[in-house]
Length: 301
Image 1 (cartoon, rainbow, N blue to C red):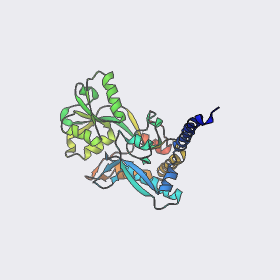
Image 2 (image 1 turned 30 degrees about the vertical axis):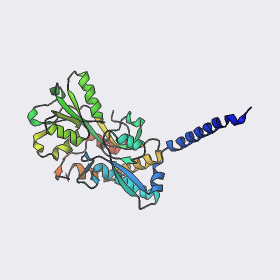
Image 3 (image 1 turned 60 degrees about the vertical axis):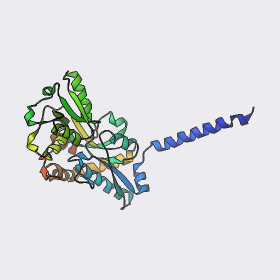
Image 4 (image 1 turned 180 degrees about the horizontal axis):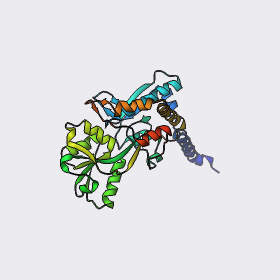
């Protein structure tokens, strides 16, 4: 047997096995080690998801979710013993947020991301921290009150959201012949409504409320219609990283049990907030209060 003739094949096999081992070694996320070794954490944020995560100006993001994420950073500092963990902010959209968490670009995203079974195949979710209902934002002058009133009309929604898929599904099931107009982000969808290019903006009620109170003429708009679906919001992190998920979950549960979560809730949902100093005046829902008593990371269902 001429062993020399088999050397290239053996080398290829060895290289393939090495690549397989390296892939396996990186397949298990270890976010805490990554943060400790690098001395930095990357938080994902949304540019127009008030009051969860948004830009007040061109500097850094603010919001309820941003405050929660920074509480997690404090917990990481305490656990790791590193007091100088740097925080980098990475803007994400409805379309790219899951991929950026899954591929390691973003370590944690606490915004208006819905926790559901489909997404849980790609990322993990911490315990839920808000519940919303998908509804419609319209101009009062339109006289639109229900989804059925939008038959044959253009309706805006944000690409990459659960509402986008639900709206298209209802459009087919109910034979409404609506034109679903996709928008890059919530602010863009609102502009479509404001400019008259859409007769409604379908999205989670809390996000619609945040956009409405900060509009030029808030009194011109109203949120209408029955709920299209219930959404459970949760912080998003990489899959298969139980140590990091436990730290995030423990941080949230501690906040919920100590009263700190409710204080933050009052700051962002029951008090004047930037940029216009408007108050959403949205008391905590019974479902969210129940979640504070018995925290869960299960989808809303």
